[in-house]
Length: 186
Image (tube, rainbow, N blue to C red; front, side, top):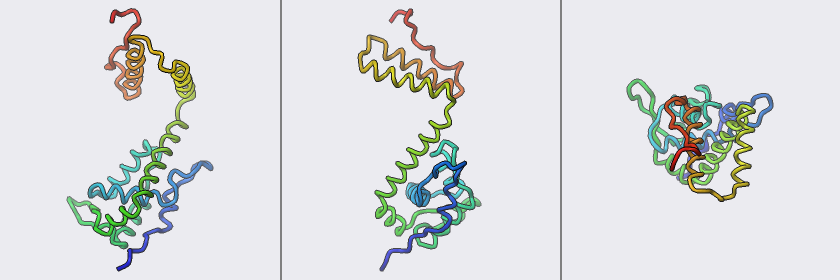
């Protein structure tokens, strides 16, 4: 009994948009591997898969339905997934053949996940406002220069400031804990 054919189609290429000559968001075949791995974790419907990929890329890239559903159809044709109607949605679950394919492709799946993570970081970094990017570079230089010479309470002060900045970014600015002050007693 042979392995089912790889469901590669022109859809994989369409899943990799180019923006103003920018590099691909995903490498060739990565969407296929990422989606199969997500279905391998638990049964999912197409929209849920699109949202997971979008979240992975901090909403900078979301595969279209015109990309996702043909890909899922190719998985079904290869016997890697089966679908059923649940609450009005078509839910895809991995089959034994799909689990075998994931096992065979384990290292490629991990590499695709790593490339997706790295690319998401690049996209996020490239979209930072200039003042924030400059401040982050300055902070990194300060950390390198400081090189582990922390005075009592200093790390906690820096951590509190970073927590407050995170809360501000997450829209919780007024509810963020106040940073430690150098004038406050320990």
